[in-house]
Image 1 (cartoon, rainbow over the protein chains, first blue to last red):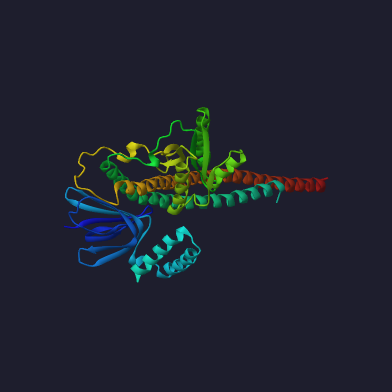
Image 2: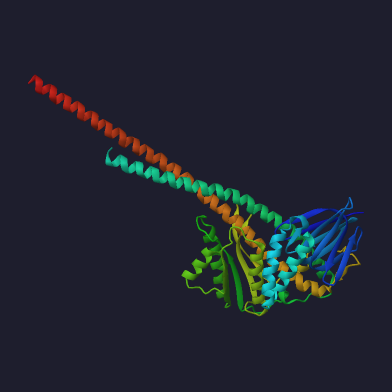
Length: 130
Length: 297
């Protein structure tokens, strides 16, 4: 039994397809979704999102927070990841992420509230891509 | 070449170069409509799923209580967000949306409330500044291709102002993109969020087992601002598509007019040229006749 996964942002649909399993980082811990999972709504952290495809390979993406919404409709389990921003691992520009990290770290040192989130976003990208 | 002919030819050249410009702008606008439309399409899945998630939370929690749902009576300060374009040459696009906004402001004043203005787009900012209408806040520089983070900036500011009671209600005047031929300037209420928007159409098949992490109330706390921002983003995208559709139409009309004008002017130029030739022939014939009669005599 597979899960119909949708990774969407306000600007585009990043990825859609059937997966065996979806593993996400919630703000209160990790969650794994298999086919037939009960309806669920979880707030996500800025972290990697892993999806095991039907051939067993893992597809990794990074999400900047958001929500994971699991619903089932006539026996089909559907998982929607709603993030304000998301990128698949192979689409991440590592050099840009590193530049962003350095810049954000400099601001974080200067005690900027938003910079901490920026650091997390950049770090998550480097981890996922690297 | 006679003076008249020279003047007409100069005008033809001038109209032709204007036509080239309007034609180019028409083509650019057409390609941008397609892009803007696909951006509107691309933003739908997120908005739909977010709404679904919100309805799910609302249906599972006994009482939905959130500052963004707070209905204040009487609403003394009413925010109006007006979405216009940064550039002109788009026909009546800005005039239409500004007309709706003005009408809205008049209604608010007639009810004895105080309007609080928020403006997106250079044209709207210029319009209200010229009329000396105070603006609470304004944003510009992204009307043609609005990115989501700008919608977030605008949305966050509006939510903040609503929360600290700078405004008691928020309406948005923007242009709805029905199709490339039907654009309609409309106005919608964004805040407070109507309870029936949150609960949605009552579905009686709510599953018994439903997991939330963290608590539903906390999730709602995160979801509702996102929902408002998504609505602002949708309004910006619709307006961008409308702006381009409007510009395409205006530029097409301008190109057609230039074509007509060139036709008329070419006719004038031909007549002027013929007149010149006729005059010349008459002069030669007259001269020859004069010479002939001089010989005879």
